[in-house]
Image (cartoon, rainbow, N blue to C red; front, side):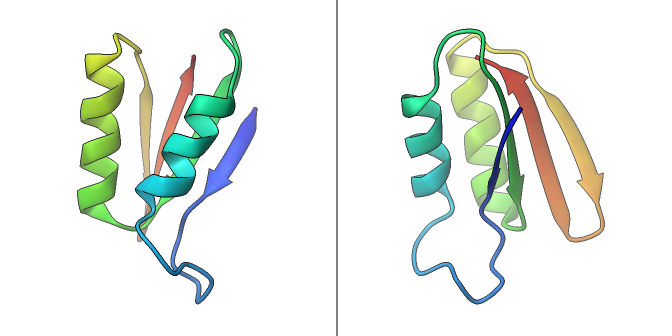
Length: 72
């Protein structure tokens, strides 16, 4: 499973959607992905995107962090 951590630990300079969508576009059919976010707006936007793509996903809430796991 490929993990994309977009949490703001001082390294992020732009929207967490950018590395998440970049990883999605570079992934292959059947590949498992995990997005780790701490931005509720971006988390909801990614969920909407996956729903529109017809991709089922798993949501995990761990304190400040939110995780989306899915198979492309």
